[in-house]
Amino acid sequence: MTDCLFCKMVAGEIKPDVVYEDEQVFAFRDINPKAPTHILVIPKQHVATLNDLQDKGLAGHLLQTVAQIAATEGIAEVGYRTVINCNNEGGQEVYHLHLHLLGGRPMTWPAG
Ligand code: 5GP
Ligand code: ZN
Image 1: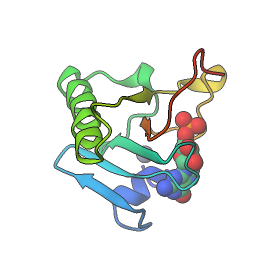
Image 2 (image 1 turned 90 degrees about the vertical axis):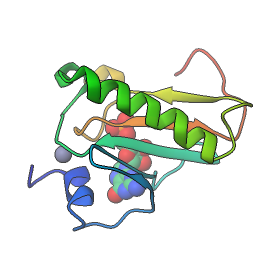
Image 3 (image 1 turned 30 degrees about the vertical axis):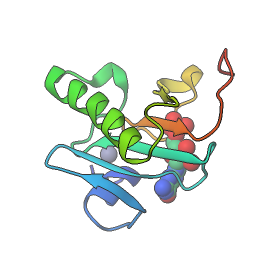
């Protein structure tokens, strides 16, 4: 999608701090981190929201990539949080599906 910030990152037009990439997914550090580790994991293909995610294989791969990156970041055992904001009341600001990986500090609950 030409007018999508995260598609532009996948295309190399905007260069974030990339931490992982394969054929299906792309991961980079959040520009405004909410925790010491804050990484966004996205599908390379444009999927606007979680409601639009049809591909179960891709869904699983996105989740496994979060866990894999948590391990390489050294936070898998102490713990971390994965968040998907969906649509307006879910707090979604960028309409290209992304999984937040947050860690490096204790998380509170419930989320705000
Ligand atoms: P949402 O609120 O849609 O779930 O999260 C969007 C996230 O994208 C936010 O945490 C925000 O900081 C991050 N973000 C927005 N613009 C950019 C950018 O240009 N580069 C990077 N690396 N992250 C961004
Ligand atoms: Zn996109």
